[in-house]
Length: 449
Image: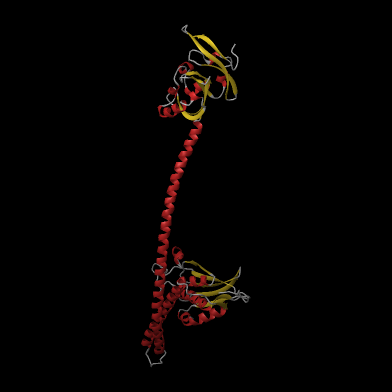
């Protein structure tokens, strides 16, 4: 009987009848959660002694870990059921094979490096690959425990943990990380391109702003230079027309009147261009004050009396008794009202009707509207009404003279005074333009503009 921890020399007979003297020793070791005993000897051979001869060796076949034992020369002496299942070999096919035959060539060098330390009793744990009977490779973690007897290496018990799932996860993570790095590089490149584009766009905007300012300054200068002689021309024509410079015949009077009206129209165009140029350049700051709407409408109406009479147009005004004043620049209000009333007179046929109304609209706004019974605006052109140099085109209709700046200027002036402008129109039924302005406050704020 071999007692645990004692060494005894015994003679064993192999399968061919030969006898071999070896030293035996009974050792304990842990495999997973199981504690097993193993008989080792100085000359442990494949056929000399296997685990099958030990009581309880079958328990190695029931554990989850894959277990292999090797002799001192590296030949497999035992493989449990899990290892056989993992590699696809039978026990007969594995027993007696050298350990290095179970690893693929590409990892053989690193495995041999680990094997060199076993003779010195060094335990090791390392990552390797198993080569299955079908030629596939399985990544594993190898935990090797050398067995020494009298400081002499007798063999190794190794456990193998399949890490295929972990490897797949790692490969997937590496793949996704690689794609993420690629995306990050592409994103960084796109960001650099966007920054470059932004810088170029900012430079282009600065250049456009500079050109716009130069254009506005040029337009303002030219318009101002035109306005002075034009004012003189209009004044001279008026003096000739009223007979101050002598008697004129009816034919001369008719042509003088046409010349004065065209000059006045040109003067209005120059004023519109000047106002728009000032607004674009930010040089127009409204001087807002209390505006009485009925008074302003009456003042503008007087300037259109002759034209209304010539076209046989009727102009009605409708104001509530308690209409509050609005908070607006007086000159701007007159320009807005004049342009809207001018359009109503221009596009309303003879015998038509124009109505000017005002009404309070919450919260704190007053709406002024100018309604005509004119030709209206085609639906497909209504989106362009407030654009610059936009004029309504009608098939077969006489083209009314104008620059297309009046409504654009109205919109700019209304918004400059914290208001809003809009319209409704139906072709051949007329149009209604209305603009809203804030009610004049009883207590003005400190920095009211």
